[in-house]
Length: 397
Image 1 (spheres, one colour):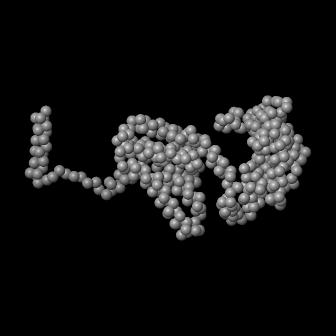
Image 2 (image 1 turned 90 degrees about the vertical axis):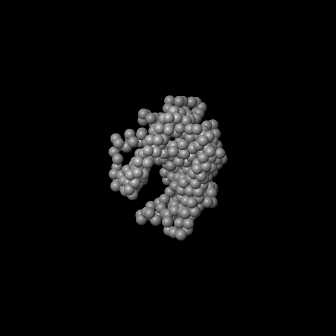
């Protein structure tokens, strides 16, 4: 073995001596600038970049992609995230974490991506909006861009780095460290950040509910006044015909609590007294509560028209109960009759739109029995008893 090593060394030395004797040195081929630029451009040739650029070109040219092409592409696109997560999970299992987590570069990248970049974006946009106030950039937009700048990297990054053998352990380590940081966020953090994290999937529904309640409370906040005023004012500048503007008010911003009603020309209400509020045997109390709220609205906005854009009660076709109970056709008829009686008490109510025409499928859940059943027709377009209640009302009113 020593002879082999020494022999190999002798051959190497002889080669070096021969080169020196010939007055040369080992040739070092430096790539030309054009080759280096070409190599740099090749790094951008990946499915994600090509797809984004192609989509941008089609949008700018106004090209409408046929459904026969678009639907398969949507299906393939929906597969990207789960397939990336499966691949990423395999990398997690095969990665030697002790060696990865000892590298300080990962922590530097984490600080840069999740702290430095968002702060830089925030400072830049704040300075830009201050210097150019005419730009249509609101403070909420600045905050959203700041949040997006700190979101986790795409799972596909680990796939691309592995494909090119371009330090995939860095991509896996950086993404894992970000999930570890996000997993420690409190439940009242911005929901969109945590919803992107597969390690927090069990908490996603709770965060969605939290964000939903926050949105419903915005109309009750004094901070909502300048926000909605700006939106309504801007909408009026876009309409040379000066048509009336409206918005939809949910029950959580009832009469006397809504701070933004003064900006609308027509007030639209979604109300479910007797279903989500004081439901079932409390239907009489629901009617009283409904009347009380409408009286508050009449005192607040006595000269504006009101439209009811949603009202309804879930009903399973063919279920009959005496006395009536929720989900029975009898209860749906009594519910609609009660709603109509309240509508007719107020001249300011100029229209109503029941929710909904036909039953439709939704995601499963404890509040849904094979879909949304608030409709007056079944999914196969057969009438429930409620359809005849509406027919009589529309023919006689």
